[in-house]
Image (cartoon, rainbow, N blue to C red):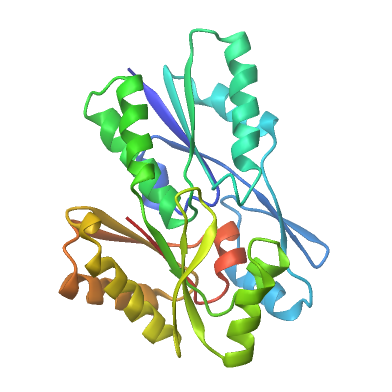
Length: 279
């Protein structure tokens, strides 16, 4: 059976993965300083980071409309369609995709369409999208792919370290307390996702490098990481991603470690220098 995987643009697949794989991307839009930036192939990270540094306001993101997902379903032109979205607790992207699915199935009652709530973002969405491809390429039928990937999401871990939490706080993705703590005491937080896809504090450190080291130490203590693939997404700082990779190679038992660059939405929330990990 032919299949397509539709992802929103917080899924930081590499350019080669997008070109070579069964993926279609539906972009979110970023608004800042009077500009609307579509998070598609035209996205310019340097320009967005400059706007973010100069603007006193936080960027706003707008999720794709149900119509945008319906267009992607039409373009997919295949038997099985899988959709991967940002955590439903972080964005309306998931709800828009669910609405589109309902409309599509009214007109195509025999179609196979499933919307996965990644309960994550960035590297976590990459992990889910590539897991779908792995299961589908193995010859599993639609129901089996859905069951395997839902189980994978339930067991997935997402961790991240950011230079600051200001944009998360300003956009309502985080309580003001965590941001205030980092600003007042100049510490860096190791953050993660709850099983439901909400943001939580995992640990803290006096520097980003120390926080990244604690991220890897947290992974190494987790027996659930053994034999998995570690996915890393970085915002304009490959050195930090490779630092995490080298530490993980020394202390963890991942099957493989893959690194990708942040797209627009991840850039908004991770900010310059942020690193997101998922496995």
